[in-house]
Length: 165
Length: 168
Image (cartoon, rainbow over all chains, first blue to last red; front, side, top):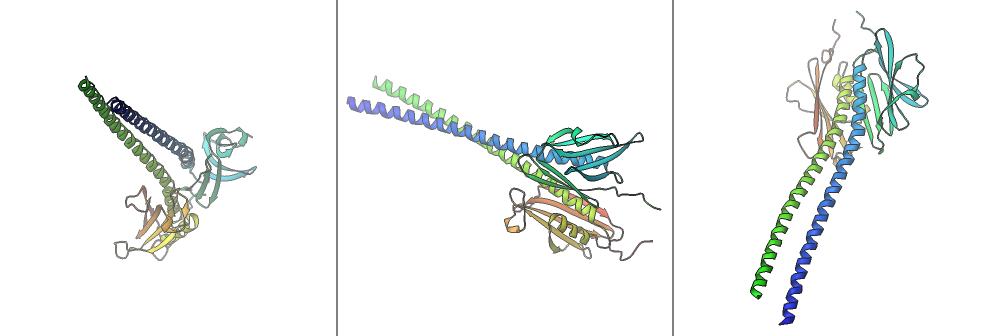
């Protein structure tokens, strides 16, 4: 009789413990799944920010500056530089966008100021940036800090030279 | 005494069952929310990738469609700049209105692949001319789904298209 009572007690206790353990494991797995998904979403947001934001920034710069012969690409010390000329109050200014020391940088200056690519302002972190121009097509090749590569092609609407009547 | 103890155990176990049930419902709701947020994040990332690629293709069509055969010149530019595949002339639905279809294929990581069977995403450029007007629909979507992730319409006036001669 007493043995049966003890056995019943132990079975009850085991059942309660087992149920508690199951509950604890399920809670743990739920938290782990949530944490993993949060990490995935964060990684995608980070990749999106670096890739898309950088390309959108450059394409908006080009669109704003797209007048005849205003947008061109030059190379200096092995660095591709996207140059955009504009005329403000009769003075020629140039905006240069390039990659240097882990950042996409921008330099807005008077054409003959003597400032160089070392004087630019860091805009956004990146792994690399290359430009090339062929006729009316401007090609942008971006590498993010994670090594992902993105390409964007823009067509320059304004052709060089004046229209001849 | 035994009856009282048994009834207390029953009440306790019943309460435990309700606790477990409540926990199961909460966990289900939480996991559903996690999965949906992951799916939405994935879709948005895919859409952002599609936007860049569709924009590039549209820019190539806009810049390179010119001359007596703008569809051919745009198609050659798509093949050269982006590695597009010519799917050949297609039925445009309008008699006497030629059309062309070019495709690019991408895997799950949005890296370009040459084989359509390996493609998770497909970018299509559908061009047709009507008189001096070239119109193109550039769209990108999952290979298995009909609705595209992103699409752009391009229209370009090409004065010599289909005329067979110069305007004076």
